[in-house]
Image 1 (tube, rainbow, N blue to C red):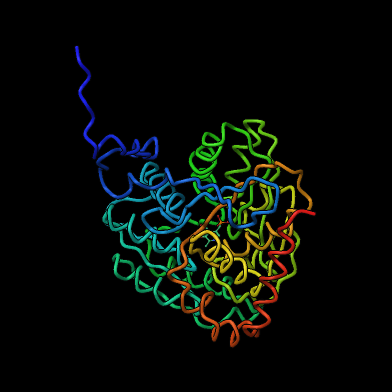
Image 2 (cartoon, rainbow, N blue to C red):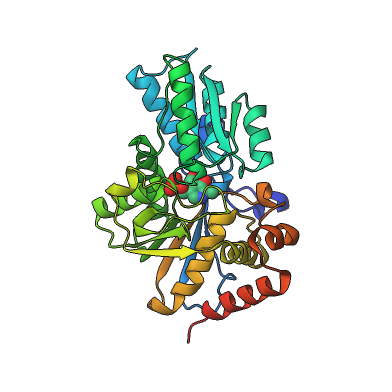
Length: 359
Ligand SMILES: Cc1ncc(COP(=O)(O)O)c(C=O)c1O
């Protein structure tokens, strides 16, 4: 028997590398949530002496980590009977959860009202509307605390009172939020790395990502050190409250989920540092990410000197950078809102690259 000669076109074609549980044809958009790529980053800190991997949650259908908890919370609500077709969900979101919920609710014929605040990106608001969600804009901070998140939560309570039967999925305390990450995000990273991982870094807001990943790491005894990257001005993990100019990063109230998780380390990052990290990731690796991922990159640069040579570190790319082109990636916005001019930003980036070198 003769072996057929491979065609020159197919002979050189590499095997397709699809995510293990992604079917060739998905049965609806929700089926392609998760199974995101893990990417080795050789150029971000090339002289760090450590292995760095990025989990691209930005390639989820809604463009962020929040696709997983949104789907898990709606599925749990439907399974428990709390939620049904024709019902209504009211949620506070700085954007990404809103985008994810707008899609999931539309798919299940549930009305969705999203409470956002003045810092929410206009592109995100337009996306939620395009997907069938309704927007409630809160423009004034809570008078007692001065915090916009507190004001948003107050508006959610009002809407629930005005609409009997409406459901709040309560992402700050819903076990399905961390559950989505203990069942999906972290096992995917662990499997890709043969369960050998020294450090995991995640940015925090509700702390669902960190709590879910930590639960999986502790259950499997992987011995991975967890690093929570929080915003300066966030009250999580003993932080002192202050205004935070970057939405979706940090929190103005201590979330219920955060009380269930103890990170091994907390690193706090300010606005200009997060911007510098995001821009470095874009230029060095071609990964355009949002502000919280930029904050992780800055925290990572600072951490390099503390890590054993050869350590394996993975971090979450929480969302993509397109909605941030007018903010994080815009010099005028950075100068106006963060008070940092182009020279000062260049100096922060140079410092970051220096701290990311070993020795
Ligand atoms: C942009 C961004 N940063 C950080 C996070 C982490 O947030 P949480 O602590 O709520 O999981 C998320 C969550 O999806 C996010 O969308």
